[in-house]
Length: 116
Length: 309
Image (cartoon, rainbow over all chains, first blue to last red; front, side, top):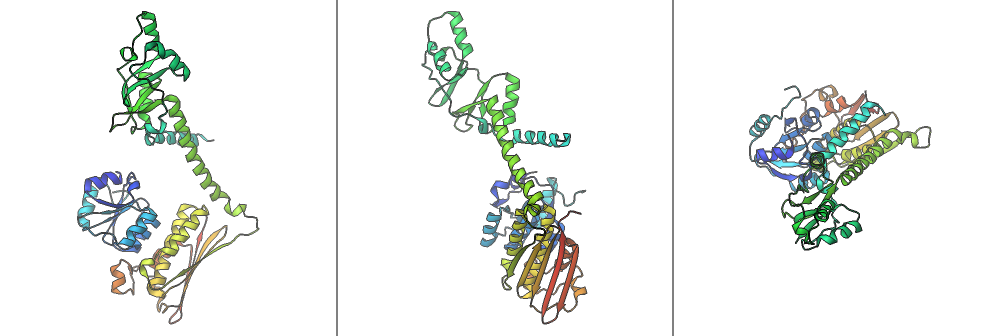
């Protein structure tokens, strides 16, 4: 499933990384702890979080994540967005809470583990 | 070249025929005729450009195609001269410029025509024509670009340390990390990551070095009151040496336990202080050494081999 299809199906607001929407996504991860994301994500994962500060971009870029979904309608800080544009990291905003976003992604075939 | 390599090249072409659009192989400088052009003029016009057919258009709108075949048919019937609009083929197979090139290849196979008019989907107007030759050229160009990119990255990966004229080569990158601003965190490690990329170091190794330096950098900012990261690279190892003059760690064994943290509430609220920083660093390193004196500071030194294990 591509980021673009996910954007459509979940009604996400695209804040950055518009030219990367054709990327394929197979796995996702939900966490608000930076070191946990660093330790437990794999390249290409889609990350769901409530954190909106600039470090989420550093973490996503370092791990080569496919994108970040911010939940509960939380908007990225201005500095976060600027960094996301320079690093070309896609950031999305969902009006829904994390449970709902993860559940809908799972229904679309995005899983949390390779052998799920 | 091994057969496996040949196969990946073919896969690349398969990928490209879906990636490239018809517009990438469309010739826009096309000789066209107006519907009023007389049939007797067709042969000299086509001959002047050494082509076998031309679109007939009026206000950029495609009306039909007149070809050498239409001209010969008109000649053999021996009928009087007339505008091309009366003899042109109007039953046309056209392509949209945003269709993938694979559709053009399928159409060439299916209809056995030499060319197809290409239309803009929104305006319905003629953009140009596409021929087999143009498809071939577009594919070769795309492959060439792809190949030179690959060549450059392979070159740096295999040769950097060997090409420098010395018995031993050592590179040192030094980063000063200020202690106050948690939001500036990651700056040093992201700069380091770019450098390692320039050196053509294997992506998995770059990832390990970036993770270790990022966690160390955040430790300097959150706990150490700032400090210095010195990265030394030779043909065998990346050594990351991190020092601060902060409060020091009273119990290193405890600090190494996953989940143990002394972070303040506001730091935790930002998603740091999960008690995973040092364990994360350790998992990236082959050698991990941490020395700390309370009231004086902490020194962390890790080694990541350049060879993938």
